[in-house]
Image 1 (cartoon, rainbow, N blue to C red):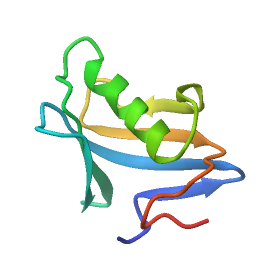
Image 2: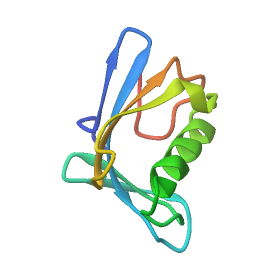
Image 3: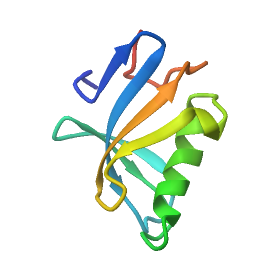
Length: 95
């Protein structure tokens, strides 16, 4: 994975995510057009997919959900999120 889908600013990790809702499982697929592609089972109805993404990222980076913030893309598949002080990093993300 290249690192163009993320950047660090002090202790915060900013991720560019391409979200695919209504999938058969929650998973990180890989890099897609300089975004990290993530699939979630939740449907894109009433913020369900966004909530599922936040829960998924919180678990993957060992954070409380309150430290994962959706900055852009609430109604889009293309999103920007901030993760405050992640305790763990996923494959392809380095400090």
